[in-house]
Amino acid sequence: MKKLIALLFVTLISSFVLPGTGLAAEPQAGRDFAPINPPLPAIKGKIEVIEFFSYGCPHCGDFNPLVSQWAAKLPKDVSFRRVPVSFNRPEWTRLARLYFALESTGDLAKLDAAVFDAIHKERVNLFKADDAVISWAASKGVDRKKFGDALASFSMQSKVQRADQDATAARISSVPALVVDGKFLLNNEATANYEELLKLTDSVIAKARRERTGK
Image (cartoon, helix red, strand yellow):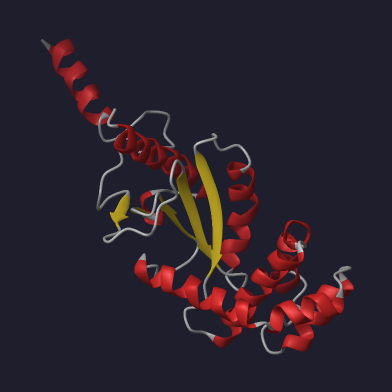
């Protein structure tokens, strides 16, 4: 009888174990994620993971190498996209424009991590003036005129505005924040560290896949 009770206890406990502990658990609304309703637009045939972030956020800097390594190994039915947000802060707006300008000139992959390092390790002030941002990019080998034109373009402003609209629609209140399939805003506090957060993300991706296929 004691053995039976012990077995039932282990089974009960296992059903509540979160991702990252080595045992599978179905992600739960309110505990592991917040439903987004209405959902963000979805990609046909793909489960999209969005990371909302800012270069001005030191936690995003810590998370960046981990999420980049994770994103490089995603299965074919999953895509990953990063969205810089400003929370209506002028300094963060400039950094969001910096992200989109680097993306536009094709220099993002080369300098993405360098932006975090410049701000949080080297204490380069990229917050206050476009000239400082342009000079920093040029010092890293980016074409000054091409980058300056991109940074000042209307399309960069439009992209920043759209990014902030998506963040508002997803009820993003802090960064880094992950959204899966436009419907699930992951709860960072449900995990002990970023490694566990990414494991939880894998579980929510699996949930989104089951919902799409009906299996």
